[in-house]
Image (cartoon, rainbow, N blue to C red; front, side):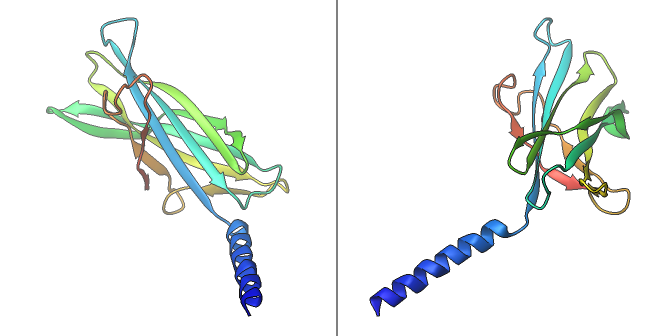
Length: 172
């Protein structure tokens, strides 16, 4: 009886692992660090952003592209107010960085000393082109949806020249 229980337990555990590994899953991660220009006294502030995309359902030969833009905000009556969501637009192929995983990294000037505007958020949509030519998008809500993440403030990630913060991704 003990042997039968062990075999059933073994099969159940293995079946559970198999089913779990075959389940389709996807996720998106965003990370950033913000740092001052090292050549001058905090004249410019830069950001380095990483977006990772993982999708087990994509077949070999799928192409993953990211469409990125930044939210530009202006100081109006002493308050920072968002003015536009898609400035500094870029479209780039995401690079494969592991099984079912693609990554993208961009460095961006966020603001200059004395400027009345700055870039406060990263916005993006991920485009997938399947080997048969079918195209679909990973994006936020609705037909014109996109993902958005608020950038950290200078010094928020510890040593801002080496430490990345994990960003909260919102659907828009």
